Amino acid sequence: MSEKRGLGLPINARASIFVPLLLVLPLLLQLAEVSAYRALLPADPANLGKCIYRGDELKLGINNGIPPCQRLTCNEDGSMLVEGCGKVRFQKCNQGERIHQTDPFPDCCLLRYKCKRADGTSHHIEWNTAVGA
Image 1 (cartoon, one colour):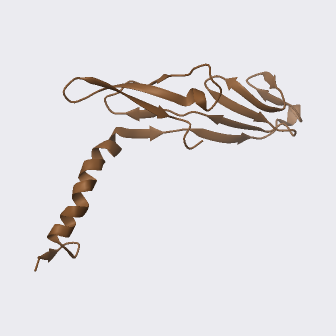
Image 2 (image 1 turned 45 degrees about the vertical axis):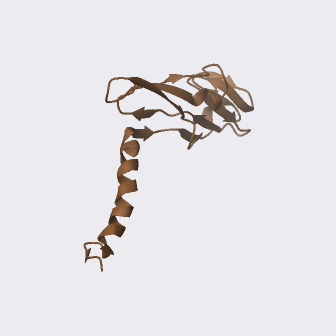
Image 3 (image 1 turned 90 degrees about the vertical axis):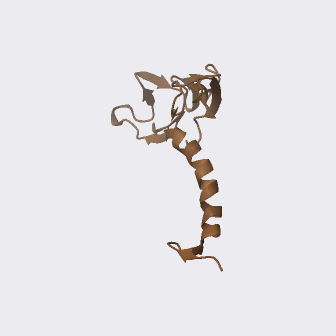
């Protein structure tokens, strides 16, 4: 009969739970932040029925190609839905470069990160930073 301590599980059962966790934990620790966003901006009382963004009037409906990789949806009342990519930070990697800079949102959110392994060799990670928007 196996000994039970701590979690009330046999020692061999605890090992079978913790070993996979130990293998996955380093990968989870590399992922530091995901910050894709979606926000509804209220209509401007001074410009009712118009969508003004950074001084420019947008057309009604979907407006793509708004830097940096955003999609703005102009509603009839002048409110706007703003959607954009975030950034993901990986340990021992650069800040990431957009792969498809000129594509509309969300395709322009795909980033490629150049990273260093413990042995000094480099590798790349591709990540869609529109996830969660």
